[in-house]
Image (tube, rainbow, N blue to C red):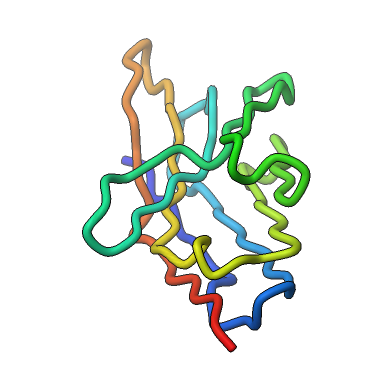
Length: 119
């Protein structure tokens, strides 16, 4: 089994910054793609950003130029640096990882962390 634990959410004013972290723990696994998704009240979960094991990145148009995703493969960690936050960025943010365990690829999700952008 693999667990994803997120941290770093909170309340921030518009224009501010937050840094989300997600650490994967478990045994006998390797991680492929990792990413961040978000879900606002009454809306579907949507992609924010993803990063491959070779550090190739993909961003939603709504966050390009404001958010940066990075990862540390040695520490099984993915980080989302969020700058110039807007009210519409308010949502629960979820970490996602595609994990290979004994030749079986499984998608894992974190429990979510709340990000609220408000004055």
